[in-house]
Amino acid sequence: MIATRNAGLFATFLASLAMLTGCSTTSAEPQPATLAKKNYFSDWPEEADPARVGRRIANNFVARGFDFQLNPSHRWIIYPEVCAWYGALQVAQLTADRSLQQQLIGKFDQFRTPEGADRLSPRSHVDYRITGVVPLEIYLINGDASYLSLGRDFADKQWESTTPDGITTEARYWSDDLYMLPVLQVQAYRATKDPKYLDRVALTMVAYLDQLQQPNGLFLHSPDSPFYWGRGNGWVAAGMAEVLSVLPPAHRHYARIMQGYRSMMAGLMKYQKTDGLWLQLIDQPDFWPETSGSAMFTFALVEGVKRGWLEAPTYGPAARKAWLGLVSYVDTSANVRETVVGTNKASKEVGPDLDVQKKYYFDRPRKTGDLHGQSPMMWTAAALLR
Image 1: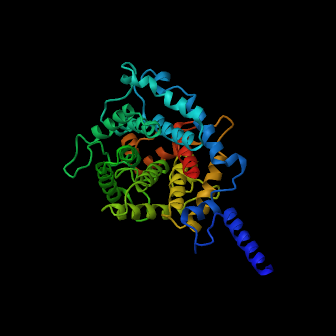
Image 2 (image 1 turned 45 degrees about the vertical axis):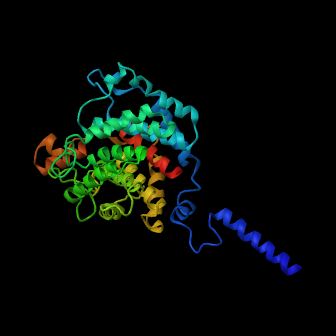
Image 3 (image 1 turned 30 degrees about the vertical axis):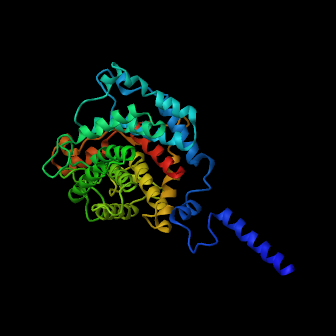
């Protein structure tokens, strides 16, 4: 009797221990997502709690007007607003904040009227086509087919004109494109499950990997602006994470994209600063820490660790350090500091001289509350909450 009772007590102890640690007593090793959550993505200080940070920044966004309302020379919704909206909708969904979610969905209602539709750009340009991401995300939340139709229209029009190798003619071979193009096509796939969207985006990503990724894993801003611009690389990192989250391992381009992603993550590890951030030009130690690129890298790292693409003991601490560092840049109004403003490729702005180009990147203004920085903080909060 005593032996039986002791055995039962021991079994109960093991079961309780498993519940506390998130590990199964019947499994030799925890799954990657469990290991990541257990070791690196839990027990946050209150000010760094992803739900708290994400909701603060999402509420900051929902209260804002649109750029075209503030600047009469601008006619349409443009990509920073879309990127922030996309992140805010995810945060609202993952935190079960129905009030915030309805405000974010309601924010789109004005564009479903004939007058409001004029604010949705018809231009065949990545900065405007990405608008389709928002109605597709709303469709994934509420199942309203009118949002699906609108969002899918943006995705299909993006591929109406292609190069002979099947890539949209909107492709510019700038690093920025590797978020703008993929996220729209990925969203169209999530909403429809039509594999044509995956084939489009995978083909495009491989072409960009071959042109822009360097042996150190990092990406040039463009072939004629040969610098490792922080946010430019951030767009790529986030875009690859989005694609890999839906691309089946059996897809013919999966291995190439995963190779490019892992090479980039390994390259980034060499340049992370002691405060967890990366610099405006990643490999230039005399440059300054920049938040938007750093937040995009953090999103890509968190996704990689939690999905098992990256070794948790190596990349988990880097992702945690980055998030904690970034949170220190969020002010009391939920505005992110030290975000570089929109930045064209240097060769287009200042010409071919490389020293002048480098100075162009160093001299770019920094803002507080710029949506380029707000957006990836919400993507990362959502990744931590998933």
